[in-house]
Length: 326
Image 1 (cartoon, helix red, strand yellow):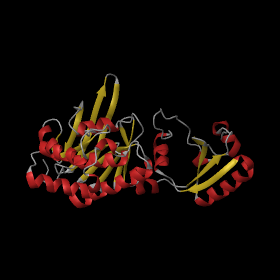
Image 2: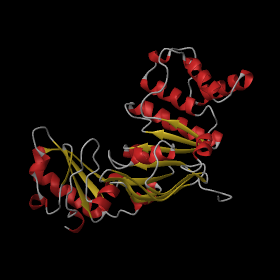
Image 3: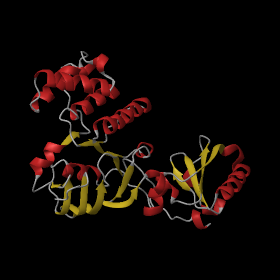
Image 4: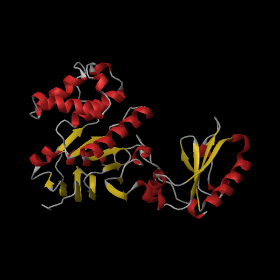
């Protein structure tokens, strides 16, 4: 065991189910006291890796460590150092907020003033002190999620594992949740490892790993990964009734990427993007609702490395990357 181990270390980590590789050789390290995002579409391997780190699945081969402790050989030590918040709710909806926290704290041996102080601290940290006596079943999704994470922090874990924590939350609740997680890192020195398929959410992490088909295809800070993608993006929103998929490279000279009801094009530079946007405006006229120009996003990072659109809930369609060279 290293004297200064990483919070998480995976080396050639693999897990196979029947004839399918859920993880196909994962290599990554998470530093202590960072918010690390594991990003990918559904089926990419995010939850599988999460469950291995939570000691709920045994890998087929390779190494997974939490603060230097192997998740298989030293599973008890790993469990002592982690807090886990699953995607599915685990609160007792018939108990009050404070009662949920107190019950969980007692499972970790907290009693008396130590339990009261810990509950008070977490209620304040997550902005739910005024809801302590509310029955959990009456809370909004965002508030209930904050109670879930407060419960996960009762044992003062060194590593907090969160599986899709903002699923089903509205934008305001997601923002509040991100702020609470940042406070956990800053005030308690806890390393946060969370899975998400929301790319705008991933941009708020200190570093991320993007998964596809059980492999890490990109690793680093979100800004660095986006900066590595050159050029500019032109996004066209069409008026109702016009089908984006009816267009092809022959119409514009660049390969159109269909994203919902929009078309997206990758150009060589910001200047080329402005020229191309002006040309599109003249060409589409009444069919055009809006046209925007922007820097590459994490969605473009995913597309550049896989040739697929980042889609959630369905298999991503493979498309040629012709726009960069058109």
